[in-house]
Image 1: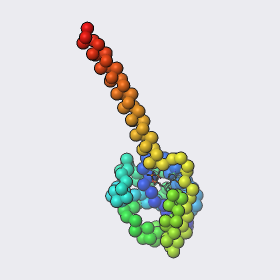
Image 2 (image 1 turned 120 degrees about the horizontal axis):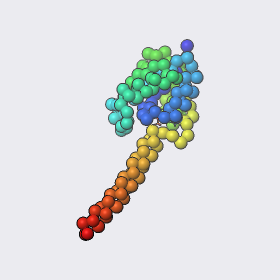
Image 3 (image 1 turned 45 degrees about the vertical axis):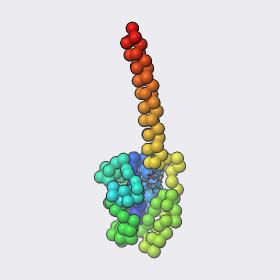
Image 4 (image 1 turned 45 degrees about the horizontal axis):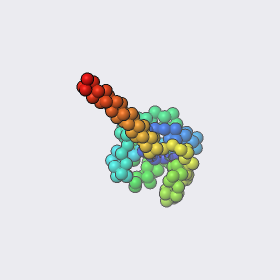
Length: 154
Ligand code: CTP
């Protein structure tokens, strides 16, 4: 039985996540996913939009995923590999080389990331949209103020 293990925050679940999980599931019989807990994200200086419970519910609902569990620190990977009987540990290639030390326990594989999409990017784009919306509201308010002023003069 080939068991694949991966980790991630999986916030604002997007097509890059889906494609990675799909390719991982095709590598073996079972895909197990460690999801960064909120306290682990805090340790990494990250704050996710969705809570751990929500991210875990979303990822576990994905048809490519068999099981999810929380990742609470950097040092649990060897224990997780043993606990889940993992034969292959795999991450996107933004992590290339970082987990080679796990080769002692199982195969280690880095898969190409999907280009031009990330949670960080989505967050940036959404904040730009709200900025431009704010500018529109501000300009409409100026128009309204102008009308009110002109009415008062009369
Ligand atoms: N991933 C991917 N392709 C993308 C984005 C992510 O293959 N376009 C992979 C990552 O390499 C990682 C997993 O999905 O193995 C979970 O990544 P995560 O860090 O949660 O997603 P990102 O979108 O990269 O989030 P962030 O911008 O916060 O780093």
